[in-house]
Length: 174
Image (cartoon, rainbow, N blue to C red; front, side, top):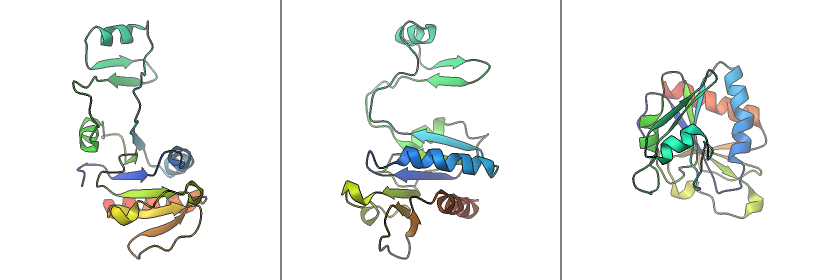
């Protein structure tokens, strides 16, 4: 299990299942409830958050790491990894500034052990994750599924229900 001073809840599913769509519905509800949300999103792609030709890009390409880009609106810290390897969630939690958040939501990292909600769409015809992952505490599905007693069934199309489940999770985590 991951170690964090702040409760951590994951959303795990195969690509194209709708993790980001659900999170974009859930986050406004949680923030309206007074909860400050942080997100860690795993990507399987190489990505750039600064643009070629910009000073921060040039400084990073020159060998600086980390590079912190700051404005009066936001801050981004770009750190190059010395070895290309699959990231570990605990390393990301250790680097995550947690003092201003009440809950860290994680999209991805489905193979790691930490509390997760599985997102499941019947039409994708993929296997369920929960039978092989005892850290899945709920399954949000677009159709009713028979689940064991220790896994909560959630309606993927019912954001208020999932919101309430997350609030209950937070209460148990504090």
